[in-house]
Length: 68
Image 1 (cartoon, rainbow, N blue to C red):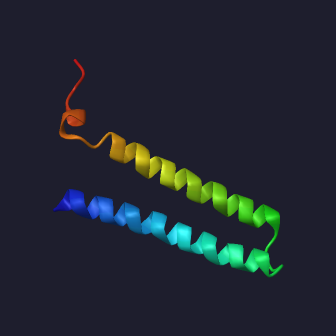
Image 2: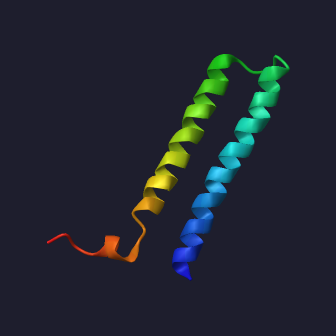
């Protein structure tokens, strides 16, 4: 149960970043946010998504085992 909560919490964080990016993009389209602000938020969101994908890639049962 704890492992499920870890995944749902991580997804919630990434989902909120994506939603924030969408809102900021709307502000940008309206001229209320700069290109730099949008780029910073995009980079932050992309990094969070990549980290979650990497974590998921290493989440199989055998990935918990020692290599030695």
